[in-house]
Image (cartoon, rainbow, N blue to C red; front, top):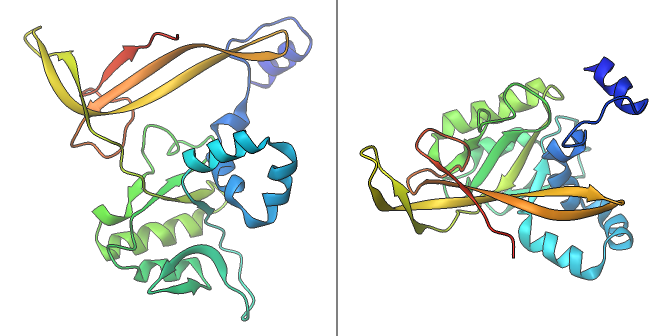
Length: 217
């Protein structure tokens, strides 16, 4: 990979899409909500863009095992109405309070295909505690983030069944937009929809799903 990168930098090789590793980092979603960075985002983003991102990105936090001073607390979800002083305390959260998603960020063998994703309300208290402790113990390889779980809406779409017949299927949809840079400007040029069965909470590429090309209007 370093050899390819040097060729790209020298202008001897063109890579499509361009190398944008930071776009693969789910960590950026947590940084957008970080209280110490709000001033930066207000200066860097327009009001319209900021409001759109706030509606789109669920509350997200970085699972950092760094100790917190006795008089301080963690900016994160509450447990029994109280702020956390240690991320391990999140293991005591009730099932209702565990409406959270735990996932790995960045380039790691568990950070794609939903391999590292843990839906808090779908696992036992012991498994949830173990997942939190495992994420903290392995920090920063990988860095893990915690997100408020937003359940996707259910809709219907025609698909082919195993017999080749077109039948309606209820499912959940993910839209993946594709942008190309032209003269320094990003242009929306296409989109791919991933349609997964309604019983799947996590939407990703799977054998039971359907990939649907989209029309940009």
